[in-house]
Image (spheres, rainbow, N blue to C red):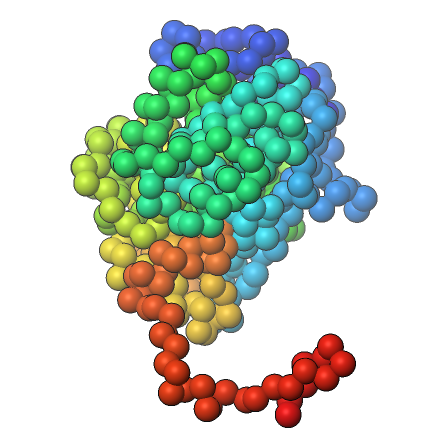
Length: 408
């Protein structure tokens, strides 16, 4: 494992020591990137056949720390049955059912290394589940703030893992403000999106994985559901690192950020040609992970999309739901709403000619659709049919025999 040389501000490039825990740049509040010691870095080798089937197979490019791991990473790449150029990176196979496990594994590992005792974060859902699980595994106290209407699965997980869960009448931005206030008052360490440097390190492993799984070659495009955008930022960092190490060459993929029209600050900034986004008022979408009205890393996301020759797409909830049901019925995958936003965007960019069917594309399904059962059912106007006593005669009668229930 390489040793950390410095933490570098993504905005002003100030160098900061990593000897003690850091949140954001003290000079400009920019997000911090981990930079490694050049001597240990240049000796990094690609994973071999004995590497663990987890994100820690990339230990050579991750901090030198004893990991808090639940088996995150090395998720499958599933070929579409209908689109010969399309592969789905199935992040639902991660612990707690989403890609958030990667970032929290790295962040909580470093928190334990630093001796931190209390962590806090706002979340639109899945980050809360992951923080609660990894904090429990590390023996660290977790404080989580979520909008009151998050999927029930996320709330249940936070409570089950023993985290201190607060439901907030508001959006993730309101939750973030409460975490910041509590961190000062209660001494929590804030592990919010891009407000500490190690969640990016965990998320960057998605970039390493997709390149390794493609035979150490880049795809033509990567579709990424973008709320906070840490995964997109992390993958771009991974591509830069792999090129430095000589692990990959060629043209980087077009990075395509996808959002729901009900909360599309990045898409709106893209259309306006702006360098940063504005607060998206009255944000509303059943894709809970995309309901981030002002991403902290908005300028970085927009810069990456532009540099890659990519684009930003936003689509309404009805189109997202249609794509979710289409993929369930024709591909056998129950995508999360955020993942269905990406599949809908893929169809849109094929129709507009931005992409060709022959282009090799990796699309991220960032979590399991099973974690959104209540939200998807509401969007489908689906409710469990009520039991009617008159239907009882239609059910088979069963008789207990020796403790075994058998048909009569």
